[in-house]
Amino acid sequence: MDLPVMPPVKPMLAKSVKKIPPGMHYEAKWDGFRAIVHRDGDEVVIGSRTGKPLTRYFPELAARFLDLLPERCVVDGEIVIAHEGRLDFDRLTERIHPADSRVRMLAERTPASFVAFDVLALGDESLLDAPLKARREKLEEALAGVRPPVHLAPSTTDVALAQEWFEQYEGAGLDGIVAKPLDLPYRPDTRLMYKIKHERTADVVVAGYRFHKSGPVVGSLLLGLYDGSGALQHVGVCAAFSMKKREELVEELEPLRMEDVSEHPWARWAEEAAHESARLPGAPSRWSGKKDLSWVALRPERVVEVAYDHMEGDRFRHTAQFRRWRPDREPSGCTYEQLEEPVRYDLDEVLSAPGR
Image (cartoon, rainbow, N blue to C red; front, side, top):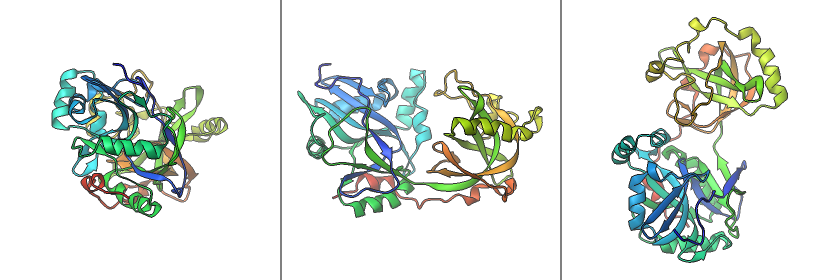
């Protein structure tokens, strides 16, 4: 492979802001695997956000890139999997599997798509220093008439339309909006763009915690919600505390600590089979590797209000943010019913949006 921009390349990133800034280029924020695709003739390399190759996990895309991408190019985008008109991140993570036979079986059963939104090189020309407006024009020209599983991300410079997308597209499983300055050059691994994500709050039960990697202080709180059967389901964690707060939490939660965990709702967390019928902390994960997933069990008696962006099935998609303790709430009242559900929106309509 001999391209003007060679792998590995870490993608340009975005920093969070509360509101959509005016006067920019806007796109939907896709909830998938960020990927930079290098193609040079018959050679294809799919690089992840960290620069590590993803090529072996998406053989169906690697094959189609030979038909659908320019012969020599470097394209930035997102790998996604759709299910019933929505993005499905769980099905996407199933691809990260050591067995090639399983990867290829899943590639046939739940094929992935690629949504392109930037171009770093075409032919012998590096576009890293070109402004976003020029790169977008070249990308549109290069992908004119492209067909699935490759898609050109809809875009607009109309902030009012971007606000409509922000409100509507969550129903198709998208994350929010990305805003990019029109004169922005491409700067790998640098947060020069802006992301605007949804935020909601929920009252959840604190049923345990994990220690921080630095020592015997709280790393994250384990959160639960009661389902319709009355079972407490593990829905995620909240973290990002100051070191002082981490130390205080150990002392504050000590009276709830359970030495005998046999009566805890998640007592079977260490049994692999138990994870097939319930959401428990410490589920086996291809992402965690050798990471210690053990945790300290607490009597599920305290309620905390957390902020979250959206749900992936029956859990928080990302780490929730601590807002405040809720001593006025009973744990039994912390159910899934309180969660706001976005109005469903078909992913095909997102991908076919003309923009302006």
